[in-house]
Length: 85
Image (cartoon, rainbow, N blue to C red; front, side):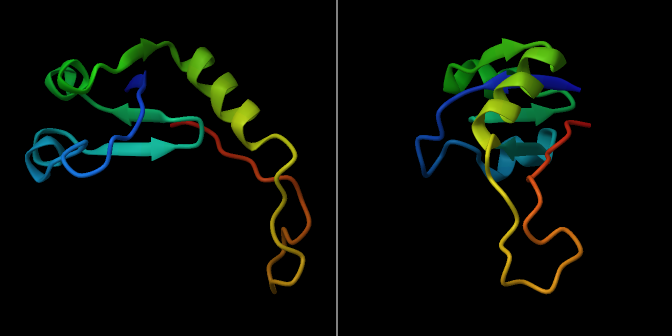
C-alpha cells in the first residue's frame, strides 16, 4: 500500500480511470491510500508518506472527535479511530 497527502481539488481529482487502475481511498487529514497509482499521485501533486507519517496525520485530524451520542451504536460517545490498512 502506498500513502499520499494531497488536497482534493474537486471534479477530476480522482477519475474513474484512476480508480480502474488502482482504487484510491481517502482518509481524514487529506491522506490517500492506493495499491499502485503513482500516475495519479504525480498528476495531482500528492506527497508520498510512509505509513507511520500518514497514520499520525490521520490521528491529528480526528483528535477529539467522538461518535455521536444520539445514535444507537456501541461506540456512541467514544473517540473516533481510523486505522490505515
